[in-house]
Length: 124
Image (cartoon, rainbow, N blue to C red; front, side):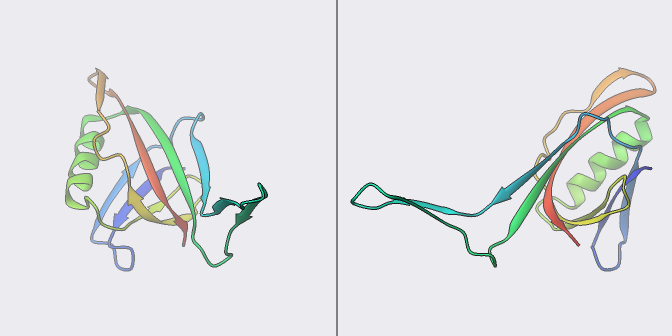
């Protein structure tokens, strides 16, 4: 299944559809917590359950066509710093931001373009 980026998240007017990413993608969890050491040397770790839990998806795409690569660049320029939506290859919908807008597009051939994308957000 393919990956779709869209903006705004409630009623999309700009969408980009890319082929499914490579198998070596990463999904990282980031939790907010506080580490403190008391005067006696005891380590206290605290995390409030209402603090946000953010995931970072690192997606790598290859064998893209020139039109797909250009539409991705146009989408990134139009939504820079804005909250966007992402529908992944498992049909899950995410809300978050693209944290790697300066990722290079590598042209390996006329119909073989590769790039990467880092997306930080939460499941919608």
